[in-house]
Image (cartoon, rainbow, N blue to C red; front, side, top):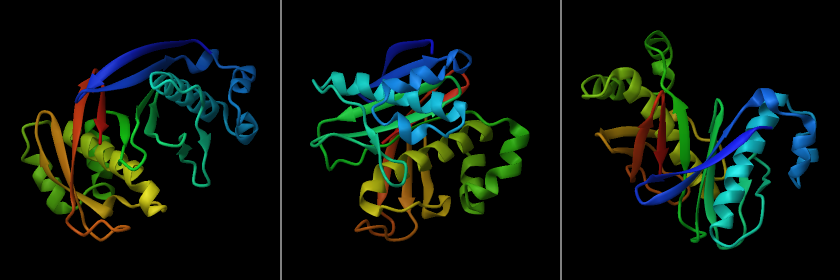
Amino acid sequence: MHTTHSLITLAGYRLHRIEFDPATFTHADLLWLPHHTTLAHAAPKRQAEHLAGRLAAAHALQEHGISAVPAIGGSGEPLWPAGIAGSITHTSGCALAVVINRARQPVGIDCETILPAEEAEEIHAGIVSPEEASRLRDNALPFTVALTLTFSAKESLFKALFPWVNAMMGFDSARVIALDAEHLTLALTRPLAGFQEGAAFTLHWKRMGDNVITLL
């Protein structure tokens, strides 16, 4: 599979980016993964995206002097080496990974393509409450961008908290309480694995073309 590696800086953290062409993916490429048999029956699109994400993660780990590829946990989460926390995301043709050397630090990253206006209107009720939607419509950002950012931020938050919660979380588990040109703050709507209801998490974000990236 044809790939290109580059670095993005967000909030002082180095994000490793893999741009890839799914059309160039072959089954033989998957053999690079130590856990390739786990993905043997997945669709080629899923295999290509997973491979790109693990390539990004391998680059991020190498920056910390670790030669490893995160395996897959029981819920599909990446399993990081001891003493490390990290997160992986992928969207069409692009994968990102971030790693820090603090094992118990919540870390989550997500990248999403900005929703078209019609789709944003159709699906927003599944992502945000009426109160959140009103807040986003009053924001200086276009509603499509604000909604995509909120979707992405919730995904980043849920990835970051998964090691503690160890369960899937719905979009109603957190609500957006602030959004500006660089940050988005979410508050939990219920207690989650030691985190109290109302606990707030501020994420960093940036736009890159038609995509937005959020990082906790």
